[in-house]
Each structure stands twice: as structure tokens, then as C-alpha cells.
Length: 445
Image (cartoon, rainbow, N blue to C red):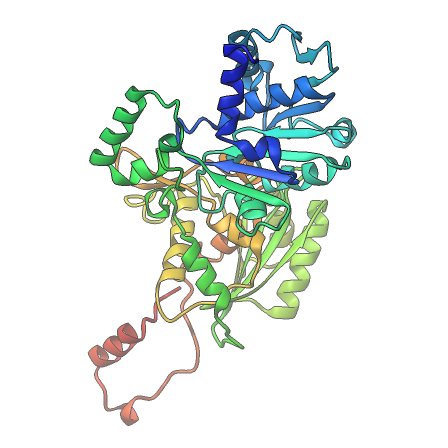
């Protein structure tokens, strides 16, 4: 007969019985605070590790030290249940009877060679998976390749487009188990926690749904651009446009960043051209060809970092009338409303997407992630401010180069200089013309 402590560990695991009983490639558990996910995962893995020899990798996006991992949680559970067959080392945990070993790693910290050390893993536990970037997941999933291996995922959702949610849970296959677990599903949830949750429900229903029920943050609260706007722009079809061509050029600043050209005519963003590992002269040569072949009305380019060198080359080639240099961090044109030029340009993108007539974007999931991945806030003066680019890059696993290139096409107003229309053989007032344009939703963008 099991002793009291061992019975308790089995009972904890019973809440998550499929972790122990079902054969699935991916076991994905999400929910709000106090659902017991981490405790149940830890207990279940400790129990499985006592039954057979396993190599268990406890992973997270970034692990600067062992303190950032679930190492302490596992140690605490071992102590609670007095599992004396486990031996705790400074950077690993081993079972001296079965030979099970727990290791702890940050996914982003692993280069190609180090990631190969995970090929023999039996179970990979990804904790706080809402922070996992798309790039990290694409590296990790094929690495856990041992026959019968499993990936356990525990997370509290943050955004509607959390990369691992989109990759795994949004469209699960038959080898994926998805479970939502909240505090009200946890029989061991303390009464004090229930009181706190109920108080939050009464004061702020939106916060309650996110914090306690595991729903993503409502986009209207933090997102500058909603997913609905971008999806709607993907679905539209515009065959051509007579509006003047504007090109946005975001020049790569660092090794993994991309140089991106965005082509937009009024309500129609027709394409993006992406280049990697180019020097300033090569970027300037490509820009020169685009200018000569397409005769854009304007080419706006980021002149922070490497962009300044490209700008100088193009200026020296005589393109002064076409090119305009922009610093994302410089003062906004409307500095009473925007913290800097970057916030102003991105808000112009948001207005363009949400105004009429409808607009079109190329269907591109990377572009979707970048446009909907920017969080907004306001400074002390009430001006719109965006989160730092490094924060976005950390969450996406890359720089939002395509979205920045699109934003650059809105650096300054570009007025439509098409052939004039004749209204009622010229018998029309200026006020009537203005009203016609207003009703059609035309604007300087």
C-alpha cells in the first residue's frame, strides 16, 4: 500500500491523468493562475522518472541561470514527498535507481551544435511557453526526435497570436492533446486564491478572464493593430492602382535582421522584397534599380545604423528628389500626439487599415505576426508610444522588418496626383468637391 505522500503525488497527477496514461506526441496544457499546471507536470514527471529510465529536458525560452528554470520547483516537490531516490546536483537531478536524469536549458541560448544534445530526450517540458518564439519552436520540435518522445507544454496565454499557440494549439492534429485548466478545476486550490479570483471578477471582468481563466489579453487594451484588421486586408483583392508609388526601405542593422523593400500605391500594398547579408553598396545598387525601373514618387528609408551609409550613396547618385531619410527615434511631425516618429508612422498604418475604402496586403504570416505583435502605451503627456524594438524582437524571435518597411511608406503624406476629374462640366463648388472626397473616404495617405 502506498504511503500518504506517495498517494498524494498520484492524486495530484490524476488531475492531469492523460499526462501519465495517453500516448501523444504533444501534451499542451494552458489556463489561468493557480490551475496547478506546473505542480502537476512536476509531480507527473517525478513519478514517471521513478518507473523507468528517462532523459527529461526542462526548457524555457531564456535561462540565464538555473534559478530561472523549474529546478527549484522539482527540488521542492522531491523534498515534500521525501523522494530519497532522487539526487540533486547543482545543475541537474538524477534518480540513482532508474537512472532518470533531469536537465535544464534555455532554448534561445543553444546554437546548432548544442541543440543536438536534446536529440536523445524522452520528454521535453516547456514551461512558460507563451514566451517561446516561432524560431525557437521551429528549431526545437524536429530536434526532439527519439521514437516515442513527447513534448509537454504548459503556459498562460498572453496574446491572441502567441507563436506556440499558433503553431500547436490553433490547429491540433490527432497526436496533440489540448487541455485548459483553471483554478476552479484544481481541487487543491486554496480558499484564499478563490477569494482573490472572485474579487478580480467583480472589479475587472477583462482582467479576470486573462489572469484567472487563461484567455489572451484583449487586443484593444494593448495592441496597436488588431488581427481582424490585418486578416481583412489579406482577404481583399485589388488588381491595380493609379496612386503614386511609395517605397519603404528598412535597412538591416544586425546580422540576423533583413533588408526589406515595401511597395505601396495608395490603398494597395503590392509586395515586399527581402534581402539578407548585404553590404551598403549592394543595398544601394538594388535601391537604384528599383528607382530607375519603377520611378517611385518617394522612397522613405530608415537612416539609423547602416541605413545612413545607404542613404549617402543614393544621395551621391543624384536621387535627392526621391529619397527621404527617417530616424525612427526622431521627433514626430505631430509631437503633441506621438512620442516619436516611429509611433506616428505605425499609427498611420493602423489608420490606413481601419479607414475606408478597403486596403490590401500580401497574404504573409510573418507580416501578420509583426503587425499584430506591437504593444502600445502612453507617456506622461498622453502621447502614443510603442514598446521598444528589442522587446518585440525578443518575443517574435526576429526584428519586425517587413512591418517597419510598411510603416516607412507613411513617413510623410503623399497626395494622389492623378488626372483631375470633371464634376458636372465644372459647375460645382469647392465645398461640394470637398464633401465628395470626404464621403468617399479619400485622404492624403
